[in-house]
Length: 142
Length: 87
Image (cartoon, rainbow over all chains, first blue to last red; front, side):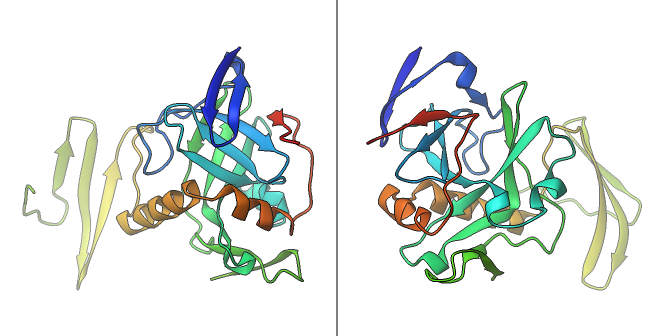
């Protein structure tokens, strides 16, 4: 068991929890080791936390929560799991997820990659909350 | 920047593993064929730049803002991640 400190406090993790991103996340090629954590205050968001840079973490969402059928479009097999990267804004309706470029993690090998999908209809900034009242599933692309 | 002139059907080799071929030249647009090893990522630069910007924004997410947005979404349990309850 190892420990790591960042904005979530002290995190304990096993070597088996480490997810290797050989190419890093796009724009962050120098950071290749991550762990995936949940924080009760921010569920259902999950956090991809860099072990190379304690300042670096990405909030992720299960694509099921924002678009039906998306996961099947991204994953060819169920040996992997897909997440979308979220950019969050003070105004909920201005918060977006990137449907163009999901994070795919292979379960058996614990290897991850941020892929870029060819489908031009997929927006990089998909507003997944229309307004605080309407809740999830009322997304609009922008 | 290295600048080379090429005609239709001529090629450029980069590092022995990547080959670019000029397939077609039309007014204001050229069509390029690229052969590269699988592990070499090939992206339209403007798309790559936009994703990079979006990643930078995402990586600066403030936990309190995330918590507020999270309140608008259903709360499923995560099984394959480490669980950390801060309460």
